[in-house]
Image 1 (cartoon, helix red, strand yellow):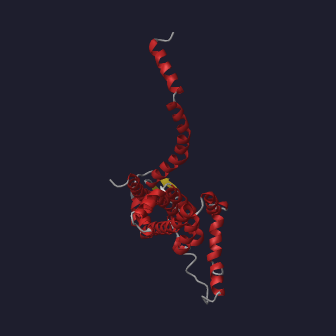
Image 2 (tube, one colour):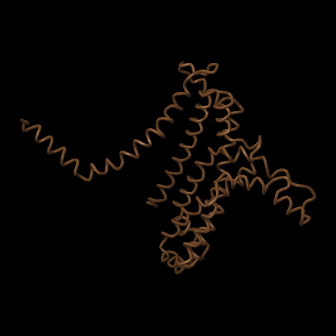
Image 3 (cartoon, rainbow, N blue to C red):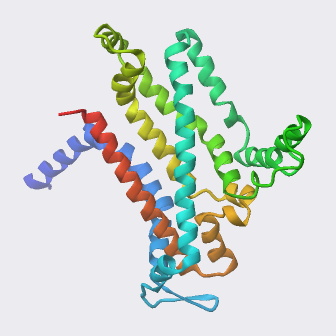
Length: 301
């Protein structure tokens, strides 16, 4: 026979299983377990490896900070990380600055029944593989590519340009094109949420269109701009394919350096330390932009 306490406990457990909270935990539990197994476990392994010692074709389980000292004091590694940070910042700036006018035009100057068509056209680059798009830019920017052939055909240059491929310039151009749709869509969503009556009120009060844009439209669109910055910056700084294919020796970034340590030099601890260092930089920058986003969403006091 069940005691009164056990029956009460079973009744309480039965009510909990039928509650909305239990259903919510069940829905969240599966993806949480998936994230822990496929994301959390590899990340924890990389962090653990970064504090171990590299041996000849083996990892020695001696705790050390030498890998981080090497990653931050070695001039080669430090310059590659700084280059990655600079390239990611340049790609983000170029992409967002070019994406804002496109999003603004679609939001304010395209008829409502045609906006879906424009958004459809913006997402067309996603129809092809990212790798194929990078190869296409390699063909376009090549020594005998479309750009050089076109400029020579028009008589603008006498010999092919060499500074547009296998360097940082090619990486910035290719990544800016690849992530353009990711920057356009968040800005478009933010612009669509702006109450048009606020813009009319600003002009009724004597503000010019330029000042209305500067004081009303741009501040209200900043959450979308900051979201675009994060969406572009975070994957760009860790991109591996584009620097490997169009960057050349001058355009290699931190992901290529990590690949070198893991697969070529078999130095897992140092590669892990470089990876954790890069993730830490991305985390700090992301937190700064998230703080700015919260300030814009909160508005002036």
